[in-house]
Length: 209
Ligand code: SF4
Image 1 (cartoon, rainbow, N blue to C red):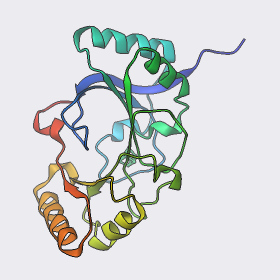
Image 2 (image 1 turned 90 degrees about the vertical axis):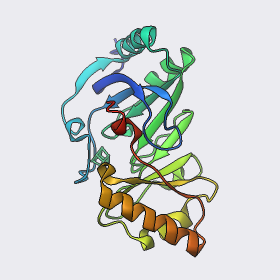
Image 3 (image 1 turned 45 degrees about the vertical axis):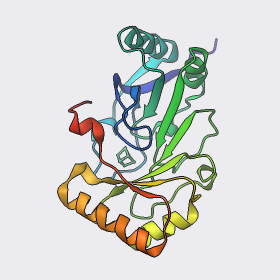
Image 4 (image 1 turned 30 degrees about the vertical axis):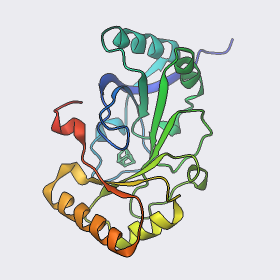
């Protein structure tokens, strides 16, 4: 008999989306375990290993329970790297409940999934991402690390549709990274690079998970 689908989960929690264009919207987060990268600046290193194998039906039940006191319309599947696992049955279940779904991915692995919002966040050193994301992602989020340069930004802007923003996110909301982000936005403006935007991690300012 086929086993019911399960996923390796680190945590499921209500919060507010603190990053990207959906910033500020109440959202229930499902953090999946495992990542194929090891970024030095990662603020979810606890999601690299471990996690608990949970049946998809149980994940859906927990989301419904959270919605009893926090009736958010959005669920964000994040990680770690969520696309390392097969999300299809979870996505089907969430759709059946009428929920809107965001996936945040480092974009190294592509899976054709019917979600409402795809956020890609290519990572150093090479910032490579699967070409199928190009037309599907609503936004590109870039962490402004010490190694981020204008040349990298220019190359990424050239390869990603100009109508979709590239959002600069200061590393850990640090002052040096905010200053650098501001400089990058200014230089982009003067050089004719379109749709490069500033941001901060809103949830950290509000002390939210
Ligand atoms: S891709 Fe994301 S989750 Fe993975 S190590 Fe880098 S920052 Fe952390």
